[in-house]
Image (tube, rainbow, N blue to C red; front, side):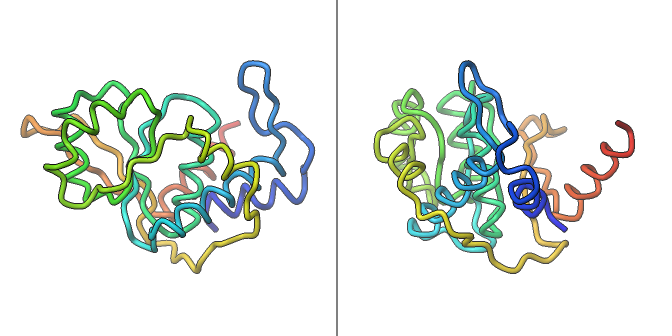
Length: 188
């Protein structure tokens, strides 16, 4: 079991119930799953494949959830980054993680432009608040693009403060995330 399958199951069983509430917006489980699939197709068309790293640098907004789960659904690794990272920090994190794509907001473009020529892998900047990204979410495709995922496949890379003065990327597998979700359910 992986977390994406839990979202799909919730979309089947609780389709019209609210999954997310953001400001004046209520997003049902079926809408959540459709948006995740649409973003996954978008990323797949951009060349993201299983095992690739995709940086997600977004605040607590619905698009963070769409992007995070879309990356994981493709078997890629979601590299979650602090939205307040400076250009210098962003350069280090994108290089260290080998991220191919940066999913963020238009407000980060200037920081990215300052460092993009120094980056080896991260040549794709995607602003989730752009008209083209919003069109992706509304137009789809909405079919499930998921691939076979092994429980030991990496799912997310989270940067810690590190002991060497530089942040260190900690990788969690699908099994790690499922185990944590199950543990939380037993505590509720």
